[in-house]
Image (cartoon, rainbow, N blue to C red):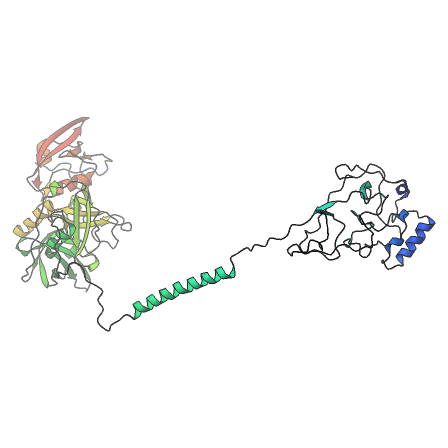
Length: 549
């Protein structure tokens, strides 16, 4: 019978005599009981003495006597003589094993049994006092596989576990395949060749390094020279930053001021015609001894020729001769936003520092540190630049791409200063301001020629409470300032209290500071066009500025 044709077996009638209790019992006829008693005293070496009716019988090895020894194991990787080789089937019963375990055999595997029968339960438990028997000597059965164990036959004609007849259809297990003779990695010969190659390569590299390190003939070692062996200062294109700096640096000086109290301050200045030096008023306003350090490191004392606190410009006169050249002055009215500029000075005492940037904006209203004067005397119409300007740059030149001075570096905005100032210990954040050179030149010329600078005026008061945009002429005096100067330029042009000035020379005016900065950049006698609103009507008039008292 094959496993495919094997059907479920019914339990025998004797199995119905099983009863439940503390243990499982089976009634034994007299002869069967005597055989069981002898089996318990036989030291398990004579299992054939047990009666068949007990359900405990040694397995009958298929095809031979139970006591006959099984064939000796044959190693699968060893050749054997065909005549001596035992004949064994391609498949062997799982419960028939060689006396010696096959080292190449597959481990024992469980096999699924047929479903249990539908009748009363079948017991495989020995009766009380019975000792389960192992396999008979030489039977070839594996330990633990024998009578009373599941999956092993108990004798012919007796039902096995789950109702399957014993000895009729054993479970089959495949014969294990012989182990592979291949190796998982390279052989010792290959490893030896690889090690030899690595050793040769490492030795060659080490020898090369040793030759390079010891190849010294005892002479001088040269690290090479540049392709251009010429000495001295190199010329650069005149329109490059380096070319402009080479021309401008000789005309820039560093200024040191020592006060009577021993405090020292400083800034920058630049040389103009007749050897005068222009700088900021706040650089020298503290008084004391002034020294000028030229680009060739020559130092001379200097005196103040004149200064104008309202425009923050001062002129110095060195006491002695020098050979440094004067700088050319440009025209700040021709500047446009985005033009390249170069700032030169002595930030934090570092003489001759050069930075670059562009014109960021024009006509910025910037307060200065004016001394005395009226309210609008401390506001400048400045050039804004992002060229780096730091403390010590004050009074230095801001030049265009041709090296002409177009502004005087004066103030910066810092995050900690709380506003725009010309005297701060904060650093540059890209917001620097310079006095337009047109205004600086006019003021400096007046100081050199007359000893003082003149200021222009429009002749109006400005309402500080007006929110804007624009500047309103107040209805009545504020802070002691009348709405209109009697006989002044604005009154002669027809302006009245309550008028709102919105433009100057076509440029919008947002607040009083912007109007004051625009007027400050002009000279007495200059003509300006003023646009104002009255009763919702806009009017433009031309006004000639007068000199302020």
